[in-house]
Image (cartoon, rainbow, N blue to C red; front, side):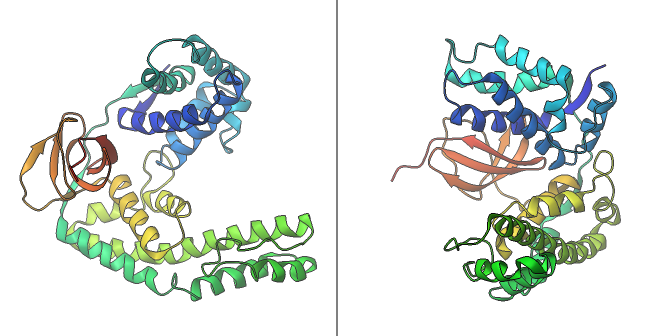
Length: 339
């Protein structure tokens, strides 16, 4: 029985396929590509609250366990199915290069037994003024804890508690070379590999714990703001997206993947809660322009897309624009403005 997969997430699969296709050398091992695709698919599901999709795949392919990102590729029937799909599209053969990426994404869909479905529109519309207050609230909650040098001090102190005492001497040498955010090494000290590995793990766990702690507080405060406007929208923040994972949990997971700065974490949290709790922010009244790849758009303009609906241009680089739609942010092409 086919496993339902949201049509709106096909763009994300194509982005994954594009990254892997561009870095792949022609003629290289297709099995290695299949493994990367399947790991990437797992990440797409976990970062989108689609744990039900993973659970349904496991149910359809016993005794598959989807608790780890490597388990999909380790399931021989699924792995073989994806490899066969990739072999069938003749990736290194003729045909337009730009057609290979969607074909590669389709290999995942077919190999994993997915059925693309249109989800019902469950968005809750809220006024843009509420979003502005949510942004301010989240930013204020993060500002102090993720400020320099407090952020670095918090990470180092927590990581030191996580490291075995036998590695403390090496740990002190390592953290002495950390940048002012406690993220990057400015210089690699000479320490035993075992100590380096232990320190790296402790520092990563400490960074993630910091984001979970301060991000959780920020989300609590944002939830209170949203609740004043719509209790149902606020309640969604702690209700499962598809199975068990909630918008709160997934938003914090995503925030751990961005560059550790208050502004980046705040943007990530707002965008994630908007998408996962399915909140449609009412944009200010502006002219709405039909989308066309042959037109030029500016930041702040509203466009009407035949597939994604109405959205606002939020950033622009050369011939590409990022547009915030109710279902998420998508990158589109346009004609860059003349200089």
